[in-house]
Length: 205
Image 1 (spheres, rainbow, N blue to C red):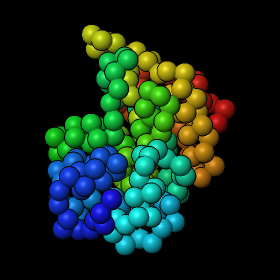
Image 2: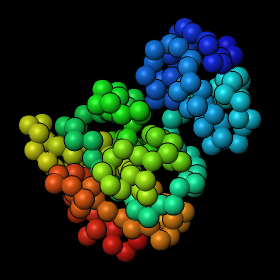
Image 3: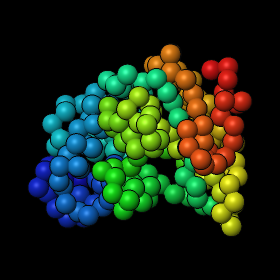
């Protein structure tokens, strides 16, 4: 792969943006540069925003391999669903596009759990999310793909892999933020999200 940096354009930039779960417009701008730097930081690489061989090597997967602690004071971990039909796959890029259409600056969640149980990065954990009004500045937002039947009825659609991944992620986050409490979005909003009782399931964490 060619070396890319701010100002680069073309199909290679689209490939890069897809790997970073960004909108693939083929233009290496400020958002792409910041996403590259965050990825480099996560893997202990030189943080220069330039995509060379070492950075390309760690872009093979969009999955979270190491959790970093936020510089923000985290008091809550809030679980959401994507409110999408059971059995259908959606990605960080899809949710980011929906949220950008709603006027957000980026995807509102910090982590997204796919139906196969893989955990993917969303918004930078050092930046307040846009997932729970009145709680964004002190929380980490997690979203699992699903939460509805085909006709739009709220339902706990989590696959076994998602349940295992969510439990593992919550345990790891509690190690980073031992005083943080775990909640479902519906505890703070008149919504069914995340379509199961978070406090009942994770009260021991």
